[in-house]
Image (cartoon, rainbow, N blue to C red; front, side, top):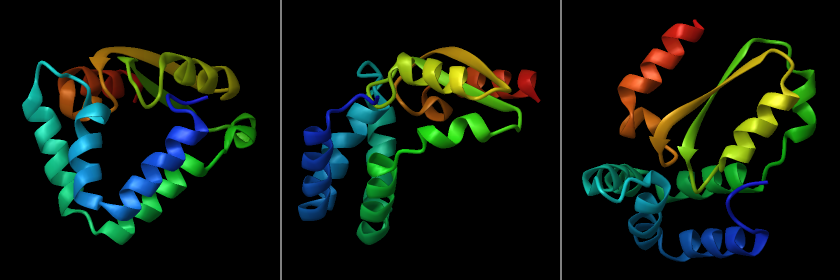
Amino acid sequence: MGGFSEAQIHELLEFLDTNHMGWSQAMAPVIMGNADRPELGEELTNSFCRTDPDIARRFARATFLSDNRADLEGVTTRALILQCAEDVIAPREVGEYVHRKLPNSQLVILDATGHCPNLSAPGETIRAIRTFV
């Protein structure tokens, strides 16, 4: 259900294990998207490079190898799902799936690219959150 195959995920994790800085420089621009705004990729790269490599590896494994889809239907709390229109990490189908499975959710498709709308579209992200709250 994500933007990567299982083999690609294992390759990404192996790359992270062997070369944290190289992984950060290669992956941050992909995760960020917005090739027309390279400063955003640089900001995310710098953030990744400042992260303790052990913590980054644990976080990446938890993120890419966990599967909590079965838990979604049991969540009763109101939830806002912010989905970027174009996201290589979590394609639109992911947001739509989560919305279908969360019984009390609202899906907002942001006119944003990448996986970090808090950086690439902060105004739109804030408006969506304020409207929901």
